[in-house]
Amino acid sequence: MYQTLEGAVLQAQAVSIHGAVFYDVVLQTGEGAVRVRFQDTFLSPAPQAGERLRLELILGNVHRVERLG
Image 1: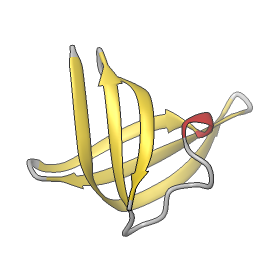
Image 2: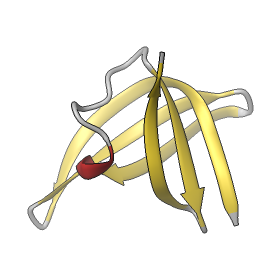
Image 3: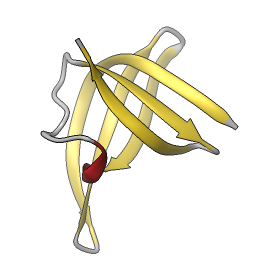
């Protein structure tokens, strides 16, 4: 039910869906590459390739995003 993903951004792209902005992100984790989508309200400015993120998911939906130093 609850999952934490942590890794480096391989690719990030902003997508507008019915006027709302989402980020499609490919994250390289210890288990492999994972594609996730989350709304821009979770992270500002937009994620960039090479930076590290931690995402918390509840039932597969992103609940929290933070940049790692």
